[in-house]
Image (cartoon, rainbow, N blue to C red):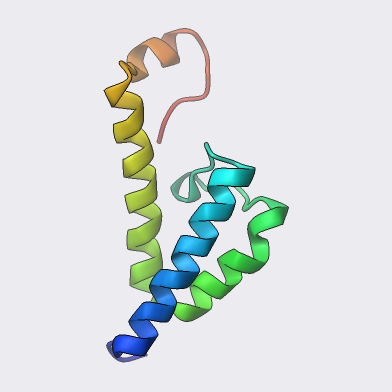
Length: 92
């Protein structure tokens, strides 16, 4: 796949936004970068996202969403070391 034209980029961003909206509704803590399985409710949207965007973009957007989630946790006083000490699932 060459560099996407304007219409292809718009389709990519739209499918990404629809997928993320589904994740926010179905599994807000889901992290695509941790190897977690995609929630059943969002599988078709994930497939459309992957088909609409170049692979490197999918990887970038997955990392971006995970980073945005981390930033939100940090803004509320999240301490990953405390979470690890209590035995809860660690952030990746």
